[in-house]
Image 1 (cartoon, rainbow, N blue to C red):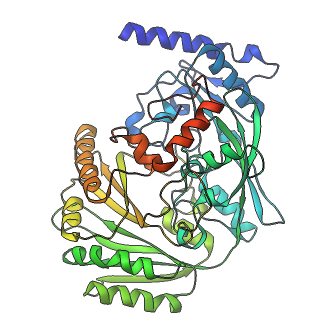
Image 2: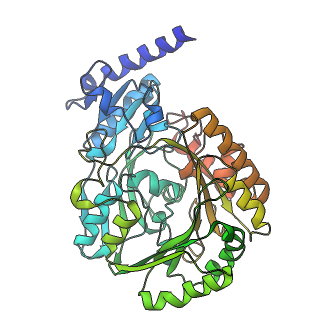
Image 3: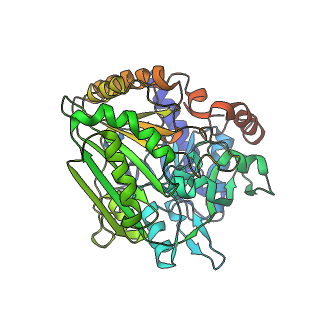
Length: 468
């Protein structure tokens, strides 16, 4: 096995070595043995540091991406795109793969018509800064160093989702290099089947996107809020929260956060598109339904950018919103945890059982992120969970080792599946997810496979949990 693996990596190295020679303009390649390789191969998660891609191609144009795909197609070399590098299974830094690092595709152009063109390598906080400076905003995620590409392609759940929809719902068009090496524009009027697939069909499938065009909103102040409850209130909170959130105005998007152990941390936090005065009666109603007052409560009106900093736990002006790895030049620390998901598809009829799952999953933090509102009314896209009440994410630190963390996480995932169904959110992709294709893509799966066969018949973008 070791000999075969070494042979495959040698073949891959030979293929990527030919990359510069096949074009009139060299792509910057970083390979094992180069001084920059050790840092350039890193993604966000520390437990994949031992993975060794055959090379990292730092692309700065769609033509560079085309050359990379040409080599992968011709020489049958595994190829993967990387933007923020937050792939939970480490797929974007895979052993033996040609990693196409799109961070050089980082142009942001906020247009007078309220749309924004965003390069595929843009990280979320950089996008938020550019939008805020232009007096605009749009729904997206909360982690500053997540890339716009992976977030959008999987759907894009965020803290204003109920008000403004998923990130992919704001997509007007995209440019993508498909596995045949063609740079295509996709929109509702052009390559409409691929446009449908790119909005929820998952990262790593169908080709490599080079840019997006999104609809934005005029920037406005947001009220962020946090209510902490005593641990004993957890079953009651889980019982009443789905109905409270479901009947709340679309302006409210909240998350229930629960720690582990016999006395877990319990909170409801979120974002309100409006003022604290208008939010107050809604939060008062939640506390009344829970039957106990929160141990602490905070409501703060903030600018769009300040609210995004708050949710990302970083500050733009001190470097903490920028990566400390892969040439990011910032101080944000890396991650050491594993994660999985299920979708909350119906009311919580056994809140004590759900509370016990969270409490009994060691070294975990568990989040129930509200959907509904604009998400449920969203356009026809590949995202299959429009009717879900929320997503459930289980994160486990590696305090007891990765194997133990994955084992505990798997128990929680399977118990949640018994309660709410065998489903999950592809942006929280779990390499051990049972029947993963159906879980992530549901009713969209058959059509997604048809799109994959059309654009990638030779399976250039095949990987362990890839549609191709």
